[in-house]
Image 1 (tube, rainbow, N blue to C red):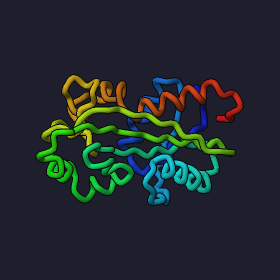
Image 2 (image 1 turned 30 degrees about the vertical axis):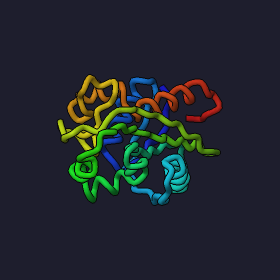
Image 3 (image 1 turned 60 degrees about the vertical axis):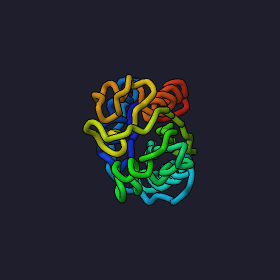
Image 4 (image 1 turned 135 degrees about the vertical axis):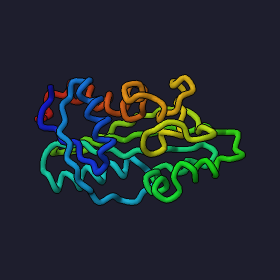
Length: 190
């Protein structure tokens, strides 16, 4: 197991998902709940990179941060990097209202995991395509109850068990790339 890697987040839901996935992939992380200043940008890679630099300034240890967004085709990628704010302001019901009479319901959940190894930041991207459901279904957090991944058999993320979601999620795909990088890069002192 890789040791001493911190996952810096202010979101306990992300922390649980990431720890479960990374443990399975052979990477041990310690969660540090820490709010880090976030740059406002249209690109989740830029946001994650900025947060990784800021978090490293605070804890001075190898770390990862993650930024994610729901990008809806018909809404030209909205809410995208503003997903957290949009969820807090209009929630799932607001997105469903925006999509009420829309036939193109294609969307992608995208995750950007940024690793700061003490010298540089490397970003890993994961995506899961699917559609926006016609109604919220299931329990979970964020936009999970309105997102049906293509590989989900018609279920929303919110209707899936955490084990099922964690096998197909955008976060898992980014974390798989991170784990592969860490486990093959012997120069990392983590």
